[in-house]
Length: 270
Figure: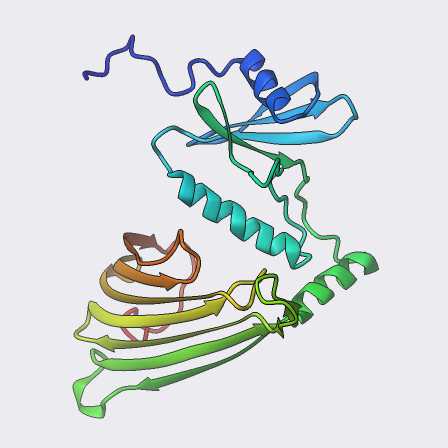
């Protein structure tokens, strides 16, 4: 099909009446208050209900993400909420958090205003301290360079071990475990501009420490200059979460550096 100026856009039918109807279809009672929020890919609206509460309705662009990808995003948010972290988890109805209206998929989130922490407020400091204290990590880094090959050869080996406070497993009755994770990476510098490496990650989920996920990610980096780097990555994932198992992902990064940067040359141990 040829796309012309007259071809319908994905959100052509998403007028205020459609937004209100979508909200009513999941049991919300719109008061008539509606405000469009900034969003590049999707359409996002702040909506008020008859009880005075504010909601954020997110309409997902068609054909951009699969239901499984959105479900994974929601599941991670639920994990964070179950771990008592202050996040806006999507509304659930009959165990579902992804809904559809007029063939548009959407989700509803409670409105939480973001703001910079008030570091002079003792309650804010207490919240930050309790959150940070629940996460623990140990890391290491080994660097090697041969003496006779200048600055254009190097080797890195590093890793990190992370764990949190114990939580009860919902899938295994009576089992209490610490959510934990680890990562190990190794990198070799081929010459002044080219690096190759591989990273291995292992984690359990925050919500259910009995569920595990693993991934291996080889990568290649090329520095055009000290301000511009290209990195190509391929990730192979194994997971006890069905929507993640045996997933292959390829992605490219192009990184620019603006402003101040380390005084050593860019080809040294990056």
